[in-house]
Image 1: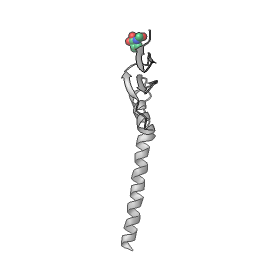
Image 2: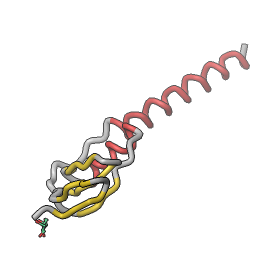
Image 3: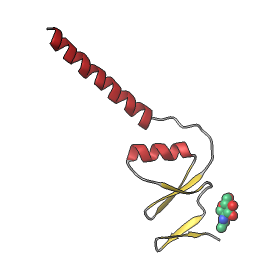
Image 4: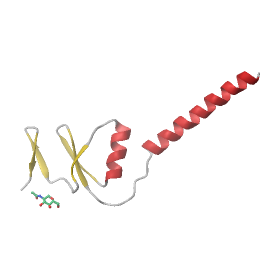
Length: 86
Ligand SMILES: *[C@@H]1O[C@H](CO)[C@@H](O)[C@H](O)[C@H]1NC(C)=O
């Protein structure tokens, strides 16, 4: 009896821990500040509103956006190379 209830408790606790991790990682609320970053992933380029938004995106999507500038994107990707726009 005692052992059976302990097992139940452990399962309940681990379920709680798992769901709270998911909450902090993937429902993260980022500060509503505009400190744009430009990031690339493969041949895609995107401006993120701030580094928190980018971090959440990487963590929660499994994507790997890499920051290339701490301002909004003003580059083009041409033949896989990052070129400054004029
Ligand atoms: C890109 O944007 C940055 C920040 O606004 C600016 O300093 C830089 O001159 C821009 N570069 C070009 C090529 O427009």
